[in-house]
Length: 307
Image 1 (cartoon, one colour):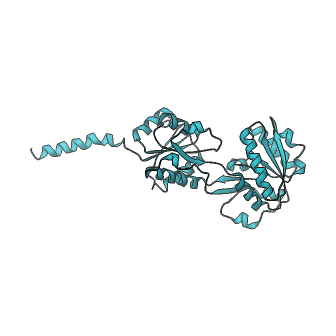
Image 2: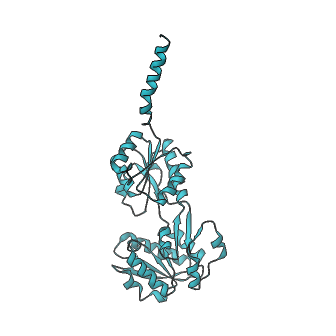
């Protein structure tokens, strides 16, 4: 009996400890702002340097509505949270303000949303990368129209930078500012340009405006390149855009999280843009317009073809 009693107490101890073992300290938690193939690719990249040990939770499903998801995250007591998208970022910044956050969002996000204890990756191209890639894909293009919203400060600043960079590549720029309907500004000039470079703002989000713009440029045989439009911009009919390599973005986010785990404060880690971009292009559209894309561009591993 004396021998059995310690054994029984040990077994009871294990049984009592087992439920508690489900609530554990997770070093890294990845919070997805909702269901998205884009987020899924990023998570795959995050898990690689962490050997698949990051906990992942998603807002927008039964187990992942903000309230229950936040309770779960607090139970996990993470040392770092990787937040994907503005929904996740806003919740983490307000509900867990003392937990270091590594974010993934667009460059136009409000800095107030990001909070003070954070760093991350902005999902956007840079103007210089865009025009360098454009010059590689269509080296003979000279007359470029730039469509931008004159009422948005960020759009105008991007236009000014684009105007300077384009001239470095020997391109003549046609300014196409608009207020409400970009088609009103584009129609008088579309037949005098060889390519339209679009600062998307609300253009991509407004399906009617976007399709009418593409119809107008198609009739004029003018290809459209969308700045930071993502793969969707080309799927919907544009000729070209630069899109981040999302799995590589995940690796970048993971690298930042590891730096924080090793003792760096997130404020000391500069926010960055993606390391690798893919050229997403429609060669078939170029052929219809009588344009030639160099063969080495089409064979490049960083070129994604949609036709």
